[in-house]
Structures are given as structure tokens and as C-alpha cells.
Amino acid sequence: MGYPRLSIAEIREGLRRKQFSCVEITQQHLKRIEEADARLKAFLTVTPESARARAAVLDQALAAGEPLLPLTGVPIAIKDNICTQGVRTTCGSRILSNYVAPYSATAVERLEAAGAVIVGKTNCDEFGMGSSTENSAFGPSRNPFDLERVPGGSSGGSAVAVAAGEAVGAFGSDTGGSVRTPAAFCGVYGLKPTYGRVSRYGLVAYSSSLDTIGPLARSVADLAELLQVIAGHDPRDMTSHGSAPDRYTSGLDAALRNHRVGVPFSLIEEGVEAETRRAIHRALDALERAGCAVEEIALPHLANAIDTYYLIAPCEASSNLARYDGVKYGYRSEHFSNLGEMYQITRAGGFGAEVRRRIMLGTFALSSGYYDAYFLKASKVRTLLIQDFQAAFARVNTILIPTAPTPAFKIGEKTSDPLAMYLTDVFTVPANLVGIPALSVPAGYTPDNLPVAVQLLANQFHEKALLHVAWHLEQAFALKPAALAV
Amino acid sequence: MAITLEEVRHIARLANLQFSEEELQAFIVQFSKILEHIEQLSQVDTQGVEPTYHAVAGKIDRENARSDVIHASFLQEKALMNAPESEEGQFRVPKVIR
Image (tube, rainbow over all chains, first blue to last red; front, side):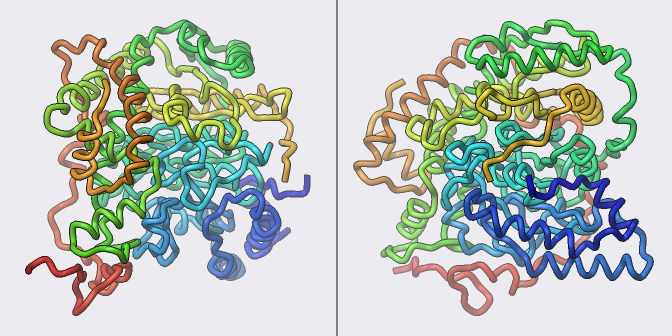
């Protein structure tokens, strides 16, 4: 297929040998966006002028003999809930449809300092609330394997951009699976880092105790390079962790020694489609051949994770989204007779149905008389889930489960049934509640040519172990480049 | 748990949201279905279990807090650049005093 599939290492090597320039690489990806995105709808904003200007500056620096930076000339797409100074940042919401970020997120600043070229902002479910991008106020993105199917969400546009060669890498946010589910549905790698590993400064808040920023890429090596650039402490985010990040890019190819993989076998049978179960068993075979020991683990409260998540996240959201009132930024309704009405009508017209549903759910669960039964109860079950994982990680290094119970579903299939949509997240929400890193690994295709994936989880700050195991799976699966519909 | 129309109206007021009558009817059905699923949590034994509000919170120590030094922040112009209405360097809202 004639779309760009360069790796970060190939770009670096090509620039070093002067086979191409940063401007040429940028131009190639902008052309792909121009040709394919009318059908894919991965981007809400494309930034061709600033991308070309930035690439030209990087070329000048190289011509002047300056050294290559970690991501010099690498075209990157950014989810539209991550602030980019001077560029529209909508969060997929009508209420921020004209919002231009007055500052950049720390992750974006670090990417630009590392030489990345930002080509645009990607579509997502409104404020990250959804699993399909169908909750975007600007319409859904399309799965590049089948345009009638969802790309997964909420960071669907980022996954599409990477899968379809519109960008080399992308960033999304993951509050309950929003990087991993679209990665799985679009056949790319997606990493949710440990809570606190990557600064949340400039990530528009949805659920502050669960939100993380994570990379999406077409290889484990690229994923490691992208994580390396954004990881680390940031004084502007109180919850960012003070410890130094590992060297994620080195030693990926080292043998897996004394590595134990845990699988909660009894929990991944029911409700999981056969192709996904087969992918789990292919992964286990590959890991055993690579020298890992496999053992069964128990995660007794995994079944409660989805209910816990759909209380805690809406509670935090109802508080975080109180800021959208038509005063400081964003949309303001013109039809009101007093201040109170201005708030209500602005919010009723500015938020989509799912965002309003979660604000209502959160407001209800925090309200007088219900707080103990709902929010407090969920916060206690969260503790039990953390204890489950602590017990598991005392015995194993990584845990293997599906990313999603099924491959990508049809557009419109679950929009009328919010609960069915929530259950898409059953295997992704635990990592957010427990604060641990998790990585979705492409594991093959269904007979209908839809991607299937498996998910690896490790203990807090063990991103390197995830990347290491994922690299071995990548070698074992040796997947052919995807046959896309666009 | 079944939720009443009056309760939903009350929550909407608390959340500064408005729903049409038609929206409310559809909303109640979906909301009740979600609550029914969430009710499963009540069966989990949490006797003596402490709640968790931040999974990595125990590891955020004082060293992570930046020193209390004044830094340059947004200029007024930047803070107001997205305001629907502003005047004399301030956000403008409808009159609240009669």
C-alpha cells in the first residue's frame, strides 16, 4: 500500500544520510492526510503551515551542523484534549469548539523540544468520555480497516492517524482505556503509563485521579522512543512522580529471563470473543517459547472494576466540568434572561448526551444521601482491586488479558445503549483504578481483516517490563503490514 | 434502583443542566439501567476497608512539591483571549444585582 510507514529509527537514519529532509517527510504525511482524511476523519485540525515551518527550521539546524534530536522531523498527531499553544483545542466538544489554547501541555513542549513536528489535532469522544469516537461533537472517526466500523475511543483519531500513516506516532489520553481500546481496534501499539509518570499539565481534566497521557505507535521501539520523551517529573503537576524514568529504548531485545506472566484464565472466557481468546493463547505460546513461565492468577474484584470506574470517573468529571459555564472560555448561549439561566442553557447546549449523562451520574453519586452508598463504596472497592493486583504482582512480573472483549464494532451498534458501550471497557479500566501501566499489543487479524489485540499490565513504574515483553510478542507475531480500506 | 422524575430534575439543577421533557423520559430509562448495574457493588464486602482516592498518592512526597516561589503566569490578555465577553480586563457576565 502506498502510505508512509517509516519508523522513528528510519527517519533518523534517512536524515543522517541526507536521503530526505524534515520538510519532505512532513510534506509526505500532510499529503497522506489530505488524500485520506476526508474518509477517515482522524483530524479535527490539521496544521500544515506550522508543521512545514517547523520542519524547515529543523532542516536549517541540521544544515548548520547541529545534532539530531530524539524525534527530529518525526510527524506527530495530538489528541484534541491536550493543549497546543495557539491551536484550537476542542476536546471534541461544542462547548470548546472555538477554544484556542493559550499554553501548551508539558508533553507537547517536550515533544517540540525533542524535534517532533506536530501535524494536527485528532478527533475524540467529547472530553474523553466514550469508547468509539461516536461521542465527538464533530462526528465519528472511521476505522481504517473497515470504514463502517468505529476506531475505538476515546483517542480514536490518534489511533487512526498512526494506523493509516497520517502520522508516525500520536498521543492520546487514557482515563479508562482511551489509548488502548483504539490502539487495539486499529492494529497499533498503545501505552497507558503509570499514573504520575507523565505530566498531566495541559491535559484537559476529565477524571483527575485516573487521567494519563500515553503514546500510540506502529512498533514497540517507536512506542518506547515516544514515552522516553514525555516521561518524567514536572513541577507544574503535583501528582507527577519525582523518580527518574528508565531508559525505555535500550535492551528491548534482551532475552526474557526469570519472567513470570500471570493470566486470570477463568475471567477471560465469558463474554470474550473467540478470536480474542485465540490471540491470548498465541501470546502465551510465544511467551513460553521466549522462556517465560506462565501461571494462573486470581483477581477476585476484576468483575467489580467496571462499576467502580463508572462511579469514580463520573464523580470526578462532574466536579471538573463545572468550569464550563460560558464565562471564562468556550461557547456561551445567547438565549438567557439571567446568570443562572446562562449557565444552564450554555451547558445544556454545549455538552453532548454522554457528557451530560456522566455529569448527572457523578452529581447524583456525590449528592447528599447517596455519597456513602456510591462514591465512598466505589473508593473502597478500588482499594480491594489494588490489593488484588498487589497480590498478583508478588508472584508475577506481568499480567496478560484482552484489551477489548471484541474487535471493532459497527458505527451506531452501541450508541442507543450506554451500558453496552461501558462494558467495552471491562479489561481496560482496572489499570487506571490501580494506577499501573498497561500496553495494548496487536496480535493478528480476524478472518474479516479486523485487528485483534492483547493487553499487558505491570506494576507501577514498570513500563520497561511491558515494553520488553511486548517487543518479544512483536517478534513472535511478525504481523504483515495491514491491508487498509483507505 | 428506580429513580424518580423529581430526583432527576433535582440533580439537573445541582449540575446546572437543563433537559427537555422528552430528554428526561429517555434519560430516566438509561440512568436506571446504569444504576442497576452499579448496584452490584453493594454486594462487595468492604467492612474495614479504607477508601482510595489516588492510586499513587502515597508516593507523592513533599519533595515533589515545588518551592513556594512566585513565577510569571498568564498575562491578563492571554487569560481573557477565549472569554465570550470581557471588558476592562475582566470577564463580563449578565447583571446579577437588581
